Length: 249
Ligand code: PEP
View 1 (cartoon, rainbow, N blue to C red):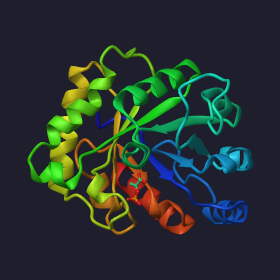
View 2: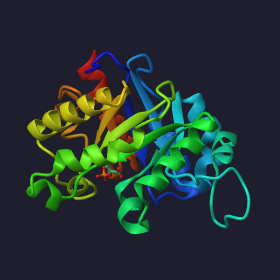
View 3: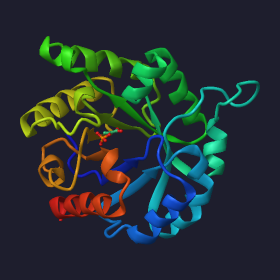
View 4: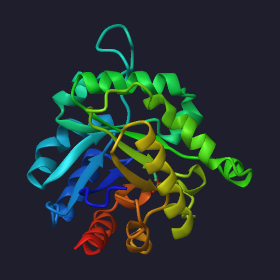
């Protein structure tokens, strides 16, 4: 396990945010308070990438996208390719979020090909994995996660990668995994990644908020958070960042 990696707090705005709301957020957020200790990233919708890019960079906040298409260019109406994300100064791209797996039906094969396309253009995928409540109750959490991680077989080890463990039952529900569940599952994810030859950061995601951030970010093997709802408001996102700074200070 690699507790010395710089923590990452990444905000996933999902399908939320007008230009006005984005400007209000940036006015209120102010900037990354401790860039040496914690990296802060924001993933607004595609329409806000260019308008937010320069200002976020000046605040020490790294830009990311929520999705990408697995081709370089061409007749793929409605899709956004990795080069377009690089053009907007994105460093990160979320791939395999549970909402895309369940609502859009994204397969592991599609997810791997999006990762390959992203790597070709220098993007760092944040690969999301996680089990449903039914799978947890059946006791098959580890095998579900191992299968989702198995797409990394044969992936170049030197490519940048972050993994986010997000139990599906904790996303947007207000229910968080307990510290024990988080610690135990992160240990398994790190073990599996080591077996596959990848030594990357593993984030926790699922209803992280200012009230639980310190406890969750203190769990062994947790190297940051992917934050949905609580990243939409500058003050709650900042509180999560500060709680993380406190944990690593
Ligand atoms: C997410 O969108 O990845 C997420 C974890 O959302 P929330 O924090 O709202 O549960």
